[in-house]
Length: 110
Image: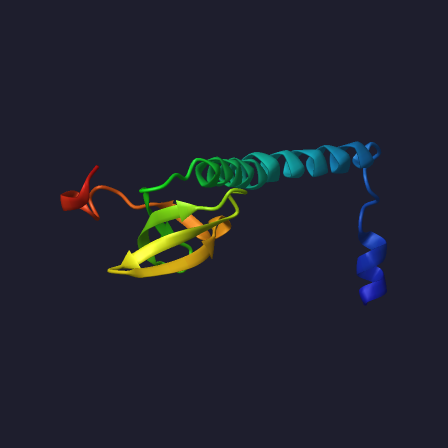
């Protein structure tokens, strides 16, 4: 019975290979423009932000810790993050997620 069904199936149309290649290229283009490109842009923006960190700036780490940059080392790889009164933590600059907005600290604006 299965053999009868398989024998009744029509053979593939000629030129089917071109359609397959076109579909693969189209799928890759869609993936690039909707997934890869936005992630790359976000990573580039994050890297620019981390390079522009300066002393006195309020930041949030990837772990959710809020604080103020107390100092940066000479190589701009690590910093001291002030998270409370006389509490400073040495952190890698790559751990910084974003800048804390003025909405979070309206009374402590520069």
